[in-house]
Image (cartoon, rainbow over all chains, first blue to last red; front, side, top):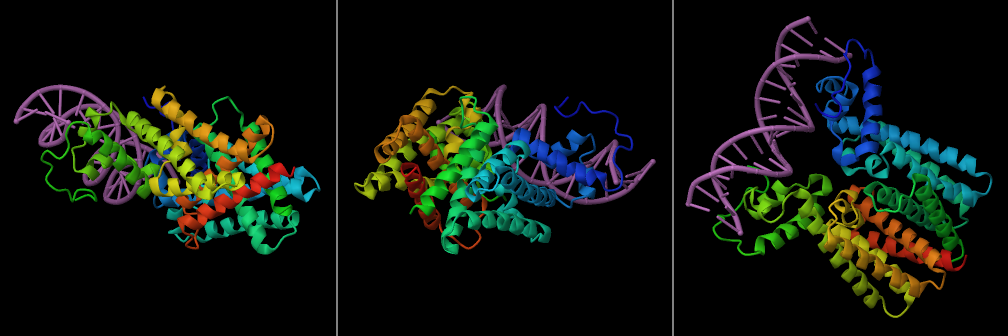
Amino acid sequence: MTEESAGRPTRGRYHHGELRAALIEASFTLLAESGPAAFSVARVARRLGVSTAAPYRHFPDRDHLMAAVATQAATELAQRFEDAAQAAGDDPAERFAATAGAYVRFVGSRGAGFDVIYAADLGDLHDRALADAGRHLMDVLLDLTRRAAPVSPEVALILVGHHIAAAHGYAGQYASGFFRRGETLDTVADLATAAGRTLLRGTIDA
Amino acid sequence: MTEESAGRPTRGRYHHGELRAALIEASFTLLAESGPAAFSVARVARRLGVSTAAPYRHFPDRDHLMAAVATQAATELAQRFEDAAQAAGDDPAERFAATAGAYVRFVGSRGAGFDVIYAADLGDLHDRALADAGRHLMDVLLDLTRRAAPVSPEVALILVGHHIAAAHGYAGQYASGFFRRGETLDTVADLATAAGRTLLRGTIDA
DNA sequence: GTCTATAAATAGATAGAC
DNA sequence: GTCTATCTATTTATAGAC
């Protein structure tokens, strides 16, 4: 009796294209709960109460499922960035910094971030939708950076790189259990946001 | 014929405590080459040309091997921090910033960083040597931070957190293939160092 | 201290029934 | 579109020989 086997009868629960979307959604849940190491097509299927063969009707192999997850992650994340900027108000600096917090919250709750979206293996698939979603994600971030930092394009690119690295680092440390004092996801997200502010200040005041 | 099976005859090649150290070393190589997802006790054994049962004479299970790797990683990394600080000269700011570059180079070449050292699963082992090595690592970093930033202990703690997050983020992005334009490890290390400088400037000038 | 052999899980993937 | 059954490969871990 494995963890996901407490399944109900499976009569006609998925039809048309529903299982495809359900597989992607269940992949997010699995990633968020158990991390990328525990991810497997079989586990995703079990969690949905379908056979382990069913996913292969919708995705030719594991990597194509991961690419679909990555594409949706990129799309959702770009939206989260825009939402966070809007919620942060009119100050360009705050709009910029808020994306770091949004990133940490997203990775903490959905389990997929830049590492999944830009994974080298998936790049080998040459998935057009994924490449487009990834580019759009970077465009959103670069636009917010440019508005916050009146610096040359080169310096802005470096700033956004630092910003992403810090946010990604905080998200990774939260996931890997680096924080041992019961820090909540929101606490870590606020730290990432603070790092964004500090990086911006350190860049402009240079 | 698997990738590691091109092994030589295995007569009396390891004795006394040699295999233990060799297993740890081979674990680093495997982590650096193929990432944590590809790590397995069996692969490490195969790489050394010993049976897959041999490691279990030295480590009760996979997690204990990982804990030994993590302990050594923490020890080596602390040394790298001190070496990098020394190489950076007398300027406390440069000594501080250099640790980020050292971290990226270490993770890039050895395959293990904060995520391995502070992995939540290994914490459950309550391994004393690992806990001590982890604490010492943080002490080295905090000391360099304190000397570079004349701020309150609370602010210094936040700065070192940002610094670690950025370095860890750059290292993770390098490993996951985020950089697609052929950036070298040294290039990414320099970016991480630059992020450290920017964070320090942003903190002091606040 | 290491080896051979083996057990029990689990994963990726396919064939053919319904 | 999904299921059952199956194949192949891999992993963690143990028992007992040398």
